[in-house]
Length: 209
Image (cartoon, rainbow, N blue to C red; front, side):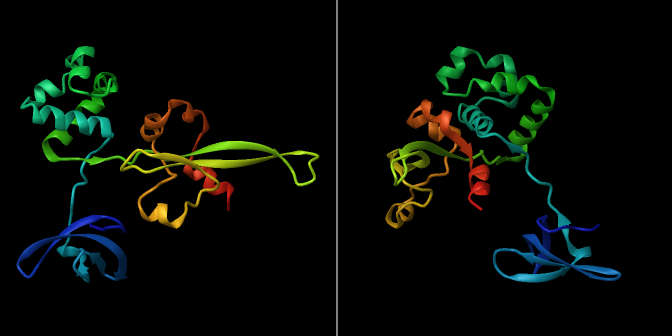
């Protein structure tokens, strides 16, 4: 079996099973050797000694929250996977996301939910946005209007927010955890009206190149 960069693998070293990630592939025909990062030290391993780890299912954060909540409540998979269980009353009582009912209505998501419940899961990365606020002003000659931008920044720990001149925050703030790259939920928590000015991080950074 051939592996590729980024694959999660297992192998035996010094009598113990070790997990790692493929960093580099070397084709030494007829053998394939792989440079593995196992968080302790890098080493080259013959492909025949590697086992590919089945990746954990990737689910949205609101689904992960539902799984954790039902397990904490002591409920079974049969209860948690039934989309009809997610009534407005229950969703409010357990602080779940209302999207759960529609998400579980999809048959393919039911299988994904079951795998995540039984085997564990990884939470998919949420899209990140800059909240870019347009500032209109006269140019230095006072004869024309120029457009500039300011950006919303947030301290995730305290929820404190402020408006900044650019994407790069003052050193003291960035060091203490302030961010200008925000999720939709983080923006909503400040003020839903800011969503009007939310632009995907990739678009803004592409413009600045």
